[in-house]
Image (cartoon, rainbow, N blue to C red; front, side, top):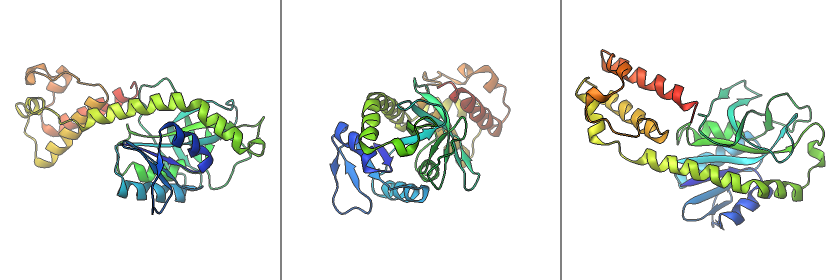
Amino acid sequence: MLNFVVALKTEAGPLIEHFSLKLQPNTTFPVFSSADTNLVISGMGRNQASAATAWLAATAPAAVWVNFGIAGHKSKEAGNMLVAHKISEAGTGKSWYPVHIKTALETSQLTTFDTVQRNYQPNTLHDMEASGFYEAAIRFSTAELTHSVKVVSDNESHPIESIDKAQVETLITENIPQLSGFCAHLCHMAHEVTHEVSAAKIDCYHERWKFTVTQQHQLKHLLQRRLALGIDSKSPSDSSTLPADLCSMHNSKAVLKWLLNDTNARAEFY
């Protein structure tokens, strides 16, 4: 299941049409749905985005979460679509780091402000929702499957006051093919990560190291994450076929640390 969190109806309209979404009755926030996609319109601001995300997660659980909409940027041209690789909150100084996955889309830092920004900071997107969305959504999914995707609508040459609803709809519509491809890739990853890690793969680790119950859960989660990222796509036949560096680990704690570090490092290239 794919969940979109969008601030405004103007931004949501092209998505609603493209994904053939229908308005759901009696919902706290406006929700549009199909068999495999939900879209909630949160309203402006990080608190609204956080509340809408949490509410949708409670009523329509999903593996893939995408915050989509327009954003400002000091120098990027209007119409460019970017994925946030770092989300910062201007009001609190907090930051989050979505896991970079293999995509043709350009990435950017994104800063969430509590008011509309007319003084553009360099090298960052400007919005009002992403931090609230991400802080809420990451509780219900993983960093590989939770992203903020923004279409540049305004910059120093063309400030926010020069943008009207028709222009927003056009910018969104023109980027839907790229967005749809990006979301399809995320949904494929989600499908892979929900598959059970094979007993044979887990047994390869149990043959060599002893894991506590808690560590067994951590091991399974790491192996699922590596599978979703395309790492270790082939199951080892026995413990002797595991990576040599991993086999040099002397205990289960060291194994988990190695898997975590190796997965995080490799995730930068996916």
